Length: 284
Image (cartoon, rainbow, N blue to C red):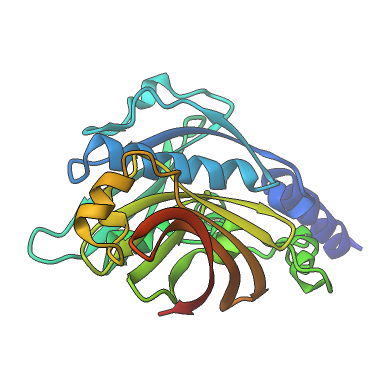
């Protein structure tokens, strides 16, 4: 009986100190990116992507405490809230290669403890497409100081086992190809990305999703280099009034998107807005 009471007391205590086991929300203040390796624009995009993923995690209650896009020094722990965890990320570029390292920090002011973990990437792009689940599990591990299974996660994961699959920018994130003049399409979690043309031009894109329909739009000003299939003189003239390029694609499976691209069409010496059929395939 004594052992039974001890065991029950231990379980109750464990549940009290480990809210993941009982499905409670964890309050986390997000302090953004610490880096001397990336410019403000890249830092803002990366910091926003982390924030987007954090607020989508059901067991986290996130407060945005960022002051600016990036900072060169760690945030001042004296400003951290006593009753919350504080989270920030350091991003470091390897000076002798294209490799990058991220260091994730979770600070608990109540006991003045800080826990961190690092991960290496062979490109900055790999940081941007890191999945929400990886981020969640990393933070959980830092909080608990071990890998912990959360029963509620099973319900979250089973969403993707339904007959009607839920499509998100995270599922689509990665590299794609499929058009003659495009070298690579990069879709990032958070609904943004790039189209890199074979002529070296790059088109910023935004992605919106409605069930299995994916709408992708060019953002920013149109450039004649976006139309390498059109004679340069004609492209320069037509680009002045051209509408943004759009893709209306349908999700076929994890590796295939198919639909219509609306862009400039050059036919019989005339440029006009028109549609062409395209199919994108996922690449490694």
